[in-house]
Length: 302
Image (cartoon, rainbow, N blue to C red; front, side, top):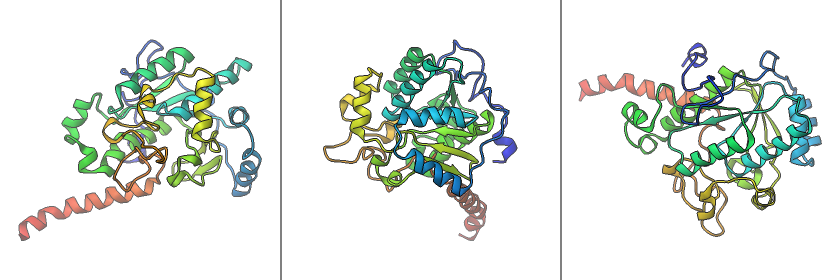
């Protein structure tokens, strides 16, 4: 997909009113700092910032991020860490009501649990959030998705599923909203590829800055904050889940397993695609296109 195509307006990200539901793709009219150029950080600046932020409380990291980074959004699938961030941002906003609020970006794969969709509406109502919802391109429902890509695409081609349901919608969100920086819910204690991430990362391929405000917190710290501050959370967490993604690739976590052990159980996979390098998917697309181009000649030869 070309840059021009990825930036084309799409009904998958709406901006048509405050009364729309998650299903309709409600989004706010945009971030007022979108006209500002993104922050440019040299490796030395990035190292300095991470050294300063490493031992700061997440609330202070969020205060700094709100002031320092224009075009700042929060990307979230409404996991526990994202919910803590939402609650902290709401408290910070009350401290300075005239400051620029942080809008949310939610990637609706169309395969979230019903409990997740219920939580989205609960959180939006409680905090009065402005949310940008991006779905797979040119589809509105799971039935539409399956009519286009076939049933159980996640089993037939995990890479293609990640690209269509998550990676492309994310990049479309970044392009359409002119995102300069995003707050994520990643933590080192989640393990896998996340074990050594810093507070601030530069994603050169996507041209954005990723900020992980709760990167040093453990699951217990996050869970304790949720309980102590009466933050709404996914009902599945009371059923043995710790990290909740799509219903077809998420299971409860057994005693002693890593927090994200219930994601893609039995697969050699720890990330859904949105935190992997774009080049991985560009390479996969090229390989797929090459294989398709060669298919007719192979059939003739046979």
